[in-house]
Amino acid sequence: MNILIACEESQAVCMAFRKRGHNAYSCDIIESSGGHPEWHFHQDALEVIKQRGGTLETGKEYFLPAGEAWDLMIAHPPCTYLSVSGARWLYHPDDAHLPTEQRREHPNHIGRREKQKEAIDFFLEFTHTDIKSWAIENPVGIMNTIYRKPDQIVQPYWFGDSASKKTCLWLHNLPLLEPTKIVDPGERVVLSSGRSLPKWYSDSFNTNISTEERRKLRSKTFLGFAEAIAEQWSNIDKL
Image (cartoon, rainbow, N blue to C red; front, side, top):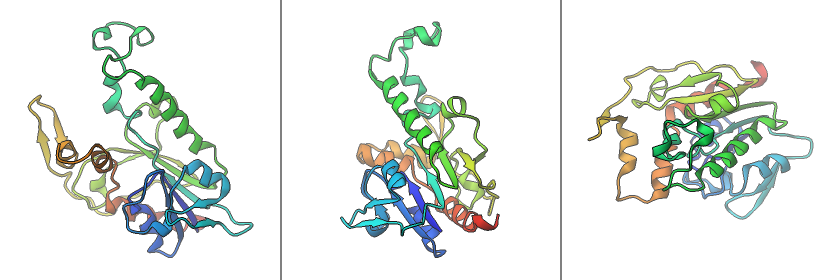
């Protein structure tokens, strides 16, 4: 199959499909970190969908052969402005008693509401493609209300990784994922505020790494999850 993994720099899902013989490509506006720039479109995913190809990170161009199309898309639109964890930065802390439409912007995050609108629009673009089968992945957040409830919410520990990360899946012409190896949900860390976080996520607050590295760590695709996606959705024409 011709498969596009949109907004994926790690190439975890891309490589899982490649292992199974598929013509899979990752795509992101940032460079890949998976070690295969020859399988990575370094440009806007929406343009790659529209043009059925584009410019690879190597500088070469690749387009699907005439008459062919993307058979499957797995999209990971950025969740910074969509997830429930970031909602508290949208409104002024002194306006909690007011209706949402009357609240001022958070004084330390001016412009965040506009960025959220752009993120919503970008997410919805992936629902309007002509690709036969697709899945969109995101944490629990505003799209559960703005778009629709997800078809499924999965956890990494369903697929052999001892970690917790609620992941929503919106599916089109795809079956629900089946757990492959349920393990423990992983270690948690209790912060001074009393809030409990998965250790892998807490580690992303390490001040010795860059903001970009923290973003990558938080958006990582666990390998067991990637393998389950590739294994269970590798033969969609037979489903």
